[in-house]
Image 1 (spheres, helix red, strand yellow):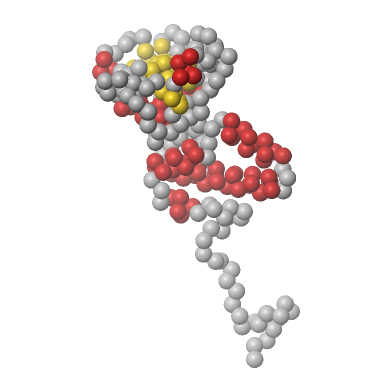
Image 2: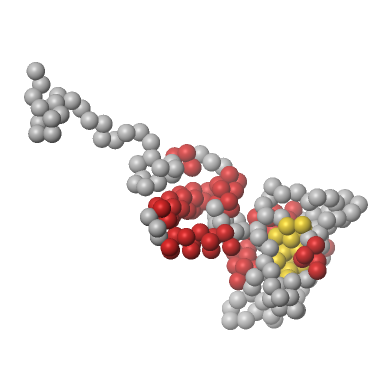
Length: 224
């Protein structure tokens, strides 16, 4: 007969100390192996839905780490909120307020902004050809520009303190504008967010031909 230890368990029994599945404490939904099998677009989409911006420049490995980190942080906030943590509740409200793709509004918001269709992800489609659109989503903006072979630029002479000046896109196929200096997507998008700009644009003209129309608007300043 097997002997028993002080806890009453048989010394001949075997306990399972490493059950299969996620072993990260307090994060039951975080499965790093499963996340690693997602495509780059799936990773960006999940990050976008969690309110994480600035993923356009990240490679897959960095996207995986960002998603795991976001999910772990979300699990911690959820645990804190259930325990009555006011900080977690305040954080959730802030995340909702700054969700990616959302239109920025202010005292100088234009009529064109009010009448434009809001686009919050690359999956959104214009209601009709020629429709005026608006977004702040980085992936939407980059896809629009790259589909037209546009490159992010700033206007020479408008820079200040080492930061990009007036933001534009240059379309070399239409002839290079010597006043424009190419910058990285990371620089362009960072300045876009810091200045609280909206990207107002068209995908197609009313005759269904591709449109290169866009403008940047700051809803807090009359001069945009």
